[in-house]
Amino acid sequence: MTSTDISRILYGSPLAKPKPAKFAIAVLLVLVLISSYTLFTSLQSKITSPDGMRVMAIAFFWSALFSSGTVAILWFLDRREHESRWLYAIAFLWGTFIATGIALPFNQIIISTIADWVNAHPTVKDYLGANAGFKIAAPIAGPLVEEITKGAGVLLLFLLLRSEFDNARDGFIYGALIGAGFNFLESVHYVVSEYAKWGYAPWLIHIGARHALFGFAGHALYTGIFGLFLGLSRQTTRKWWRYTAPVVGWLLGFSAHFSQNISMLLVVMAQRSSGAAVSAVETPPLGLNMPGGLPFVLGWLAFSGSYVQKFLPFLLLVGFILWRSGVWERRVIRDELANEVEPVITPAEYEGVKRDRILRTRRIPGYNRRTAAALVRAQDELAFRKWRLKQQGQDIETDVLVASWRDQLMRLRESVEPTVALGGTV
Image (cartoon, rainbow, N blue to C red; front, side, top):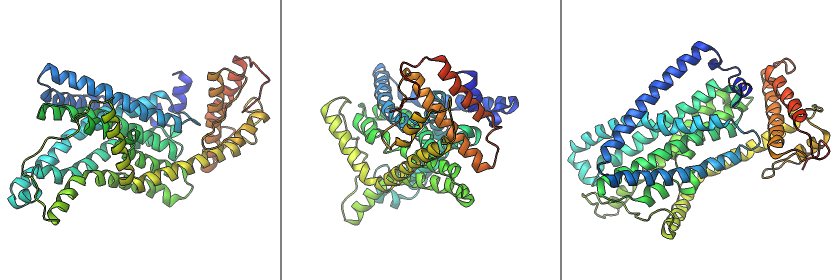
């Protein structure tokens, strides 16, 4: 990352000033230390043999592989205005270490408190059967604590890096990245925990199911929804929606998470209402298939299909807003580049802007792939910056970022000799 890239990311951010930056770094280091300690002690207590270490290493491998698929899909969604790879890494690592590590002790406190209450009420314990305390605690602790620790990361990006948080699509990408990071480590943690408890690793349940639907049937969806609505609040021109959208988004993400975690409790209550017996003895989880085999793939497909049904309203909402954000992006790019001239954009390139569609991303021929992508990104960034300035009633021609993107477009054209006539676009 160049100094220019860093300056753009930090433009207008409190982090551009030394004192706030040092304070933020100090707080971040404290959070990392706390999270690392809680995660290390939790995993260490469950790994008691070389076989446990082997299981953890395998779990890390498969969880990383599935998580890379989630990130790749987000990268494709972000293709018109790619955020910095550093921001991708920061968002993912917030979910992996900080959100997970901070959530773990709070989850345990809530679960232990509810378990103690259940043990003090034998009637409740008998009614719900084995692991009654966890069945009650799961829909409380998980959605409440985890959506706060993950959502805090999205909110910090929103508040501290305003120049990199333009719209609903940006918000969904940041939120889903944090959720994917959380899911990456949580999957490993559950595999290791179950192995320590039962002597085998339920791969299908904790790798296949948790990464079902390419990772968008869990934490990436929950926190992605919050980020999506944060982005809407940045994108909208309606003042009332600017302040209510984040609240609505968090509640929707919480609701999606709650609907998943309450499943065990609902199953038990359905059994009781039908007169069926509920076991008082905890049974080991199913799903012994190792990733990579046909049974595992079929199980992954089955979980993905069931989650489409379970989360259908949330998936439809996300899909609709992402589609509308794509329409908004193309309109802003088309409108704000209309009055630009060479070297910012050529007439032929602007024709490509007008032809851009939902699954068709414009490219500029005549340059090597890297330079062509940099040209498109700089043009798109310039368009979004101009739109933002207009909404804020600020002067476009005196803005530092506008000048910076125009200068970069000039330098890009001067640094590389086109192989065909300048301005050809497909």
